[in-house]
Image (cartoon, rainbow, N blue to C red; front, side, top):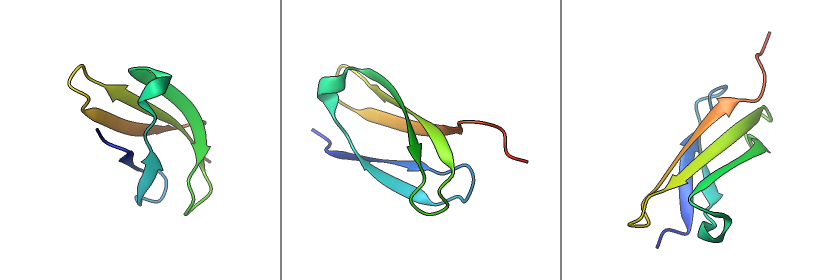
Length: 64
């Protein structure tokens, strides 16, 4: 079982490692600031029946 997962920050392009908590369900969504550039992102996590997880991020709002 994975304990961490990585997503790519849309603003700065860095790979960000976050903890994975399967107890929160197979589809998760939350807002988190990038630890590198501090831009807020909506993080999406999907965990399939085999326990394999996928994560991706979208900007919380459009940047000027």
